[in-house]
Length: 138
Image (tube, rainbow, N blue to C red; front, side, top):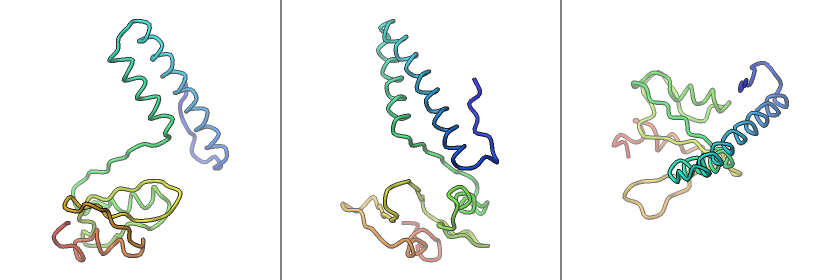
């Protein structure tokens, strides 16, 4: 089975290919779910059910972990198609930064000592995630 989105196609074609691949993956997961349900393997059935739910949510996590000053923020800016994360000649990003897709563009600050998360303007992001503005890496 060829599960590949070919580069160079326009966005509509890529979206169509993605939808077809997602449907194929759903069919494979459904078959696995049915097979392990028939064999009464509850643990595998639960794992397949979990995978079906994750596929339906249409989300994925991509972790970028490399030595400091290796261009992680530049890479992520290229992946999302815009300069959102601060970049520069010196190491900049000093805290774990997660990007999520959603209906509204916003920045939510989370801190282990806070009960309530804080929302800030996107333009203020560098003040919280860079070594210069946040030397304690908090």
